[in-house]
Image 1 (cartoon, rainbow, N blue to C red):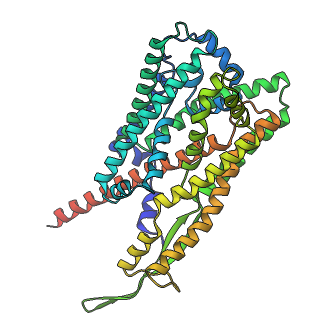
Image 2: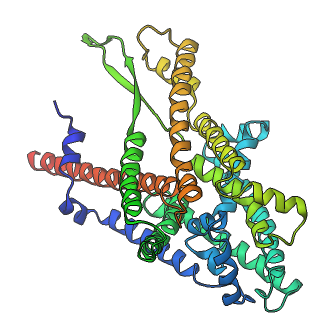
Length: 444
């Protein structure tokens, strides 16, 4: 028997979309905000020699700066006002969430609902300003030490660079919040998504040009595209995978009527953390290395050693990257899903897992199952994200093909489409309610 909700979803089409005025306004707002972001990636910071910068970046684009440049939509290569992108905000979010687990004050704020969430968001904004200031100053100093990239080095250039980069990051943070509130999808994820999508055409053209020049064989290029399709299908399958726990509700009597006990499911996603772990891991790896790459060979010996050890494809880099992904997969899962609260809610409404005692035993069982599937989810994330590192180090693939970029693109696309579908479904329900009211009025 098909449910009413499934019937509504099956009837969603372009005609229903054309009638959803609120959804169309949200989509247009989202597109307009992303266009503004893309325009900002072409506005350079003052005092930069673009030709010298392009030459420096051309020598280092195969390294970790190339990945950072893709996340920022090419803003790093042009040293635009959005060169820091949204990464300081993500790093600040990581720090605040880590502190939430050890700070009683932040933990209490987290339990206070909407008011506490706003206060935590305010702390995250303060942390974003601090991290963006430190990164902006480091980039300014690094640019001054790279030949003739800066036309007029000095404190005036450093101050203007810091103000420009911090202002760009704060604007992107605000823009992402506006997209989340007034648009469709998660604003922060969509900004990163837009940057990756904007760089993919140039990356594809570069790959085809290498094939024409003989640097890459036709068979290898074809295998890469086939592998990309396979990886996309694999990501979609894993992102939709769930472990469903059977939930039974006992019989209940309402007045003189006895209602049969219902059975439901508690869905546990295989990858509860979503795309957050690779983004967090990338931001933490990019945080200390971005500035070091600008002064490679001219800084302290220990800094050059660390930069070389953390280069793309190096064993230590891969080990740290995988470790961070696994850590954040478990950490973020623990943040967004609390087995004890879930068990308490089931007990409150009379639900129970067959064969499991309600309360503490149910929480322990849910935590046990969640831990096991999170292991599989973390392994899946790590495998997908290190794929481009192997391609680059062994076959010299010239761009960040697959892996983290495809994971972000596919996950954000699925989440955004799900939100569009939910808005259309709500619009369908509103239409049904209005029709029911009209029929009731006619009968009266």
